[in-house]
Image (cartoon, rainbow, N blue to C red; front, side):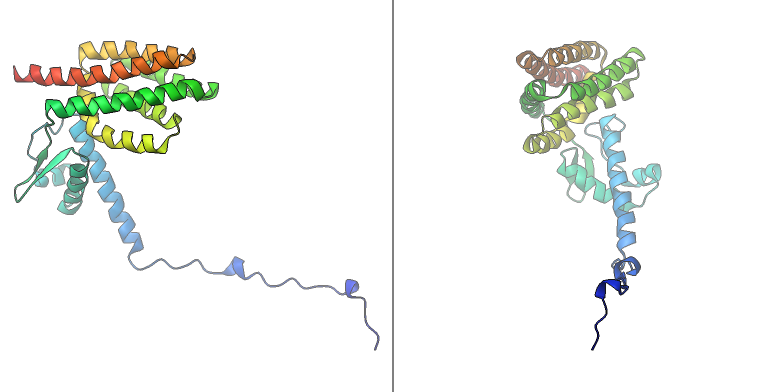
Length: 249
């Protein structure tokens, strides 16, 4: 029997089953669960912002029905959000009596800002020694934008940028444990920071401290950068305590 040359025989490619394979079906209700999760997350964020900016004051009882009207949602996402905010320390759930915005004690504020100050000093020292020139340049851009908002007296935008700068320094330290711990504490500190940083006297002082930190980082003076950050955070906690004392008089 004569055999043909296998090299001369055209070969047919195997069928591509992957190209026409249908996408796996989602379990029933998956789209609805995603929608509900988005509503709950958005509701939580909006209530958190209301607490940070003082629209819901410390110690104030939370009117769930009023929040439903303001936020345009049902009572379920409101209650789910309040549970999350209670876990963050921003809301106190009252058995059979609803909830209210937490009022931290002086000792709690002192202890909270002492730990945040230590964490941010470590991060600032690490970043000053290890960050690339490009990374420091990005931090400088945020800093300069923050100064512009200060010049415009735009308190809300200034605070957002200030918060981003602190978070960026933490992220640049590239220490996951540090990042997790700092994030947990900052949820409790955002309202005190907003009150303290955006008061007239502390605002001016805070800007000068940020300028010193940025300059120290660019000069690669880790010790000075860390010390300024440490004092900066402690002063913010003290300013908040003083603002509370002033409000009571």
